[in-house]
Image (cartoon, rainbow, N blue to C red):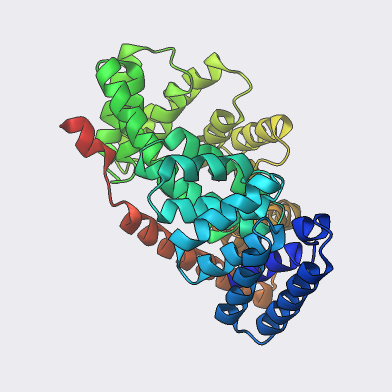
Length: 393
């Protein structure tokens, strides 16, 4: 925030003392300029408290001086004198409404004074206009806190979109997004349970929630209920198939194939279902069928990583590692954290008698596998609220 202070001051200082110049009094102008010089010197010496007194002296001479109003408001704000800062910031903003950064600071000041309606109005008006990334982030996070305090999650999510457009990898924004979207998800699930308690959509949503708990029997049971309620739900057969295919029970895994085929009959361009049928063919050691399925999936989605990895695996098993290598390298180039691609590539290099390359790929596999596991644990720990508990109540 100190950087913000410097930006505001440099953006406004020495813009001219409008009222002092207009009254034609050279004596007043000289006094104002003297205090301005002293204020500038004191700021350069990092003495903001003394500089504030110089700006106050200017206002005693020239009550409508824009620079002095703005700079005194800024200095008082950073001294945490919000009551003193507010009228000066407001006066500056009213004199020149396009002072975006001053209005941001005014909104933040109002929030600290408990004037939430005024704060949200001022921050709303300018958060999308601020060009400086740090200032926009401060304004946006302040506004998000106001909205979440009043449970206005829709507005908060719109601010998140503005912030992510400017800084898509900032962890503060991403964490705020996680919290907002999690709360929105919980609200939507609760609303769905009230509006349509026996619907296929509710069971579908419940199954997704149970993925957090890794409750595979519960997931499968809810997907089955969703199919019973509405067998034409978009994507439902594929989702049930995925749950069945991940089961350690061989009988359930056998059921997956028919569900994937039902998904494909509903959408013959479903590359994910086609790819899974390739996996099942591979499991049955039917390499020709697996190859055809993987190639079909890649024809529909040329950059589909799972199909590329599957086809590379077939080539490796067929003793064609040279054909497998470019497929896996392309996957890793597009997604450097793809754990399975590294693992498969290590097998390719062993088959090609390149032990050092194989060792490197297995090290990369372990590295990203460890990262993923740590992230999984962190994500689980961050689940402070369970929407299922609200639904069950």
